[in-house]
Image 1: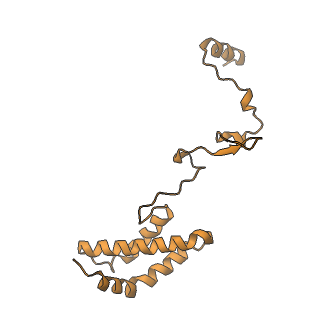
Image 2: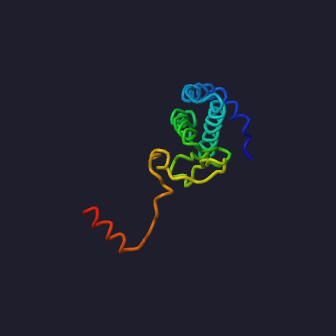
Image 3: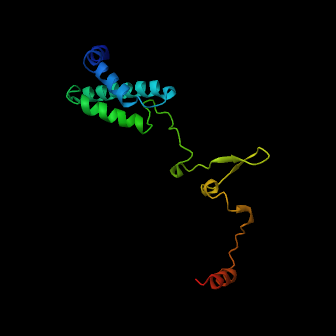
Length: 144
């Protein structure tokens, strides 16, 4: 079993302050509520890659700049060192989630993404009918 305290001291002496300063610079525009977590997550990722490099027999000091760069991207894309779930953006269609709006009674109901932008369309008055004869008649009336 390897004694990691020596590597930890080497990391603190050679890489910790450089990684911390890069993290502060990279996440300075983030909201203060998320900034400290992002900085801690990024430094943790740099330490994890430092350990992986040592285990593989590579020189972690030579790879430090690249490891810091990829750790910043790792945090920016909401990945976690500890394996926690990602924070989904409900407005992103790739998340597969529906945004909940409240009706006039205060009850939540799922909405279409286009509902807010097209507030002038009466979506309740639109009837969906799959009768091909009605579709053909509507196309003739529209001249399509």
